[in-house]
Image 1 (cartoon, helix red, strand yellow):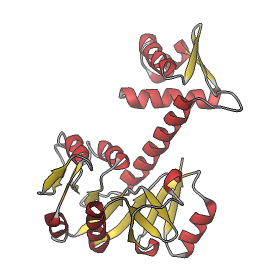
Image 2: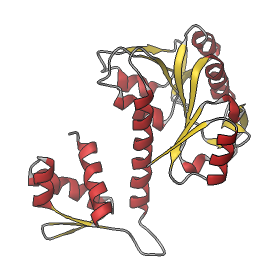
Image 3: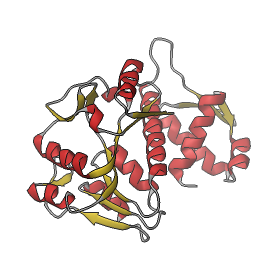
Length: 253
């Protein structure tokens, strides 16, 4: 079990039980007590737990002000849960497109051990992650890198996308409402619109903080998407209206 996964298991136990003992946790996870102690020390440095003799106690914060570190950890947990659901949608033999963004990176990490999948992307972060994968096909967009957007953009990006039959595309977005998916700039807009037009299944992956927000330009109407994957705190009215438009909405976490 990798460090990130192990600490997530520890955090989940703490959230559920509010405290844990080092010896019991080490035995349950099949690791050394020193490993658990180091993990708890790291969580303590982030303000998520308080160390006590032989274990740790979960910091829920006061009623008025929960800890910032705990809230940030919760958001990371939700994003990883959404990424895991999305990775489960990908089948052997699929051609998949991963948009730029932190959720796309999380999905990419879950594909490292998968095989017989073609992954297309313009995201440098996704490329760096999947460069280590030996059993899937990684296809990068051959255009100019834009540091501000951490991806490759240009007229050739859209033309390149149109050459492929994409089974599923996973979009990230800074804003979405019942009017549609939005983008902060025109370079990102053009790529997303090409993907909307040339994918068999279009999946928008957003946490609840992006729902009901607005941005510079609209990419597409909401009904042009097929599925929305979000967390359990998403606005219920938005969820219901999206479903009435024919979208499948999945709330995870």
